Length: 80
Image (cartoon, rainbow, N blue to C red; front, side):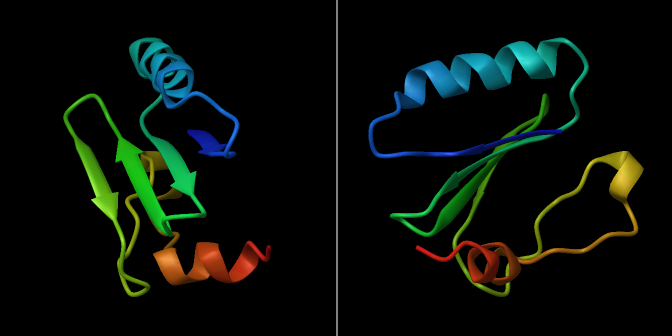
């Protein structure tokens, strides 16, 4: 699993390219966390999804199938 927290000075294009390389190399999921917009983009080989409600349950890779996190959990941990 690849996880990136987007900083204001980072290029989204470079992060997406990195994520695509990881997925092509066998990574199951990648998340981009945008703290300014309070949104999480989830990339897999099959699709790209986004989550923006605190109650949204985020998809997990197979090895973490029994683990559950919501968008609210993630942003509750990230204090700015």
